[in-house]
Image 1 (cartoon, chains in turn green, brown):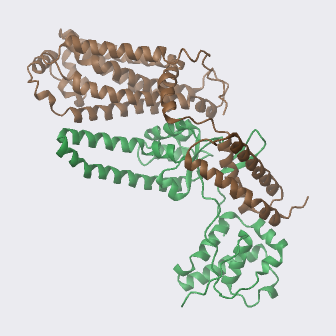
Image 2 (cartoon, each protein chain N blue to C red; image 1 turned 30 degrees about the vertical axis):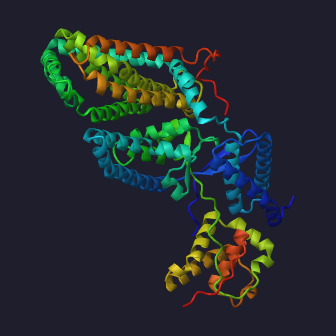
Image 3 (cartoon, each protein chain N blue to C red; image 1 turned 90 degrees about the vertical axis):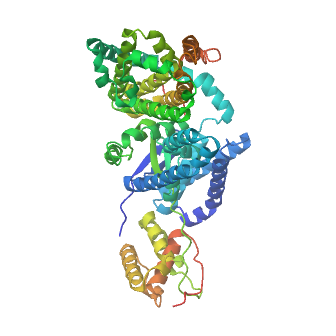
Amino acid sequence: MNPIPEPSLSIATPDGVDFRLRLAGPLVRATAYAIDLAIISFLTYLVGIFAPILAITLGADWMLGFTILAGFLIQTTYGIILEGLWHGRTVGKRILGLRVADDRGLRLRFSQVVVRNLLRVIDSLPAFYLVGGTTALLNRRAQRLGDLAAGTVVIRTATPESPEPPARASGKSRHNPWLRRPDLAARLRHLTDPALTQLLLHLLQRRDTLNPEARLALHREFLDHFNSLLHLPEDSLLGLTDEQRLQDIAEALTHRPTILTPPPIG
Amino acid sequence: MILDSERFIARERPHWRELATRLDALDASNAAATTPEAMLDLHRLYSRAASALARLRSAAAEPTTIAELESLVARAYAEIHATRRHRPAATAWQWVAHGFPTAFRRHFSAFAAVLWITLAGAVAGGALIAIDRDHRQIVIPGLFSHLHESPSERVAREEARDPGDSQAAHATFAAELMQNNIQVTINAFALGIIFGIGTALILFYNGFILGAVVFDYIADGQTVFLLGWLLPHGSVELPAIFLGGQAGFVLGRAMLGRGSRLGLRRRLRLVAADTATLVAGAAILLVWAGIIESWISQTHEPAMPYAVKIAIGLVHLAALTAWLTLGGRKKHTTPAPHPDQEAAP
């Protein structure tokens, strides 16, 4: 049940502040790049669609020249322009909550963006980013050659925030027993990995998309895990379903009150 | 000290939200924190968040909140220690007038190495053609198949061409030239990561082809045609590719690190800005070279006198030399930093 610990890069600043950048792994980076590649292909396709308009106004020569140059520019500058304008993010990286960052925690410079993107030529060799992928796997900071040369890392920006607080299955307001025992709630937060909190919130949030058997099995599995960490005296939990217990745990973990909504029909 | 983390977080969270809001606003506007007061406020909020992070860590509790706070502190640290941002127009002018030429001069030894390797390739290419002129069929790649015929035949054909025909397909040809040359320049730079070896191979090969063609035309008595054909665009195109090679060698030298006490990451960081500047400058020059090659270089006598074409090439060469050797000298008289000196963040 414990998620695999994320690799991170520790930054110790000159003014005595320490923080960690959570590094993105090769798989999520490859997925982000696949999204970007799809967008590049789509933009190139659009150029092909609209280029004939140029043929009407300026002639076939200009149309062909425009198509060649625009396709090349889209492929070469897509990453440079977007990462430069959006603080290290392309569309793919935005969707997956990733960002290019300076490996000393400083502001990303445009020259770094240029270097890491130009070196894709080498990272993509001989095919499917074999050179870049291998380098990233062998590197503690998951840097491909372009990142190494530019002094950049790709990090996860998705803060361990935020799925909406889970809705209670019961419409009635009731007390959360964890909140009557702040000492135990604090201990639970200490023992629980942030990624697991996220998983729990997603599970509760997506209750209506799961079939009932799978949902009940998952609830039981989560609850067994939390019980293995710590549990409240049974008498304070009497009459509560597994889902309600998990909702209480989620509230204790996130410090957020749950929204009281009517139970879903069916 | 025992920390009541729950109460502490509840008390501090509004300040973290304010910090996040200010950082979001800075990101969105892409401008520096406007006033000294705003900057002071940002620093105060950052210090408070950093202090809260340290306290929560020492309590060994609240991993979710710690992760959230770390992300916030990291953003604020980057923002506060960012170098001053300029107006885009001022930055562009600064880059043209100072950044690009000084980056070129700072790494002139790498440019000299580019020239020597290209020259070595050119001598080898010329020597191969000197042995047997028919080697041109083997040496010159299919991409330049129009160079497979003898120079005299080509000159006769070009000069007999109806000037009206030469208007055809200029834009397409220019786009192909830009694409090909910029890609070669990017490759020459990027291959520098393998300790400069890849860059050296590309430059030697380019020099080899160039030497073969030049020797072939001179040996055939077509020197004037050759100059009129190559100089207008070559005076920009070749230096641009050399600049890409220069950036590649700078990168390769940082990889090797010979004679430097710095670690690999530090060496690479120090040259990143200059290599990006050199490649970007080369790409811009190649756009101009593509236009000139398509519209001027491929137009021959009688449509355009060779003297005019040669003069265009010489003017290009003189202007580029002046830009790269004199640009940025007057205002910035401080000596360039030694490569081993770390730049302040």
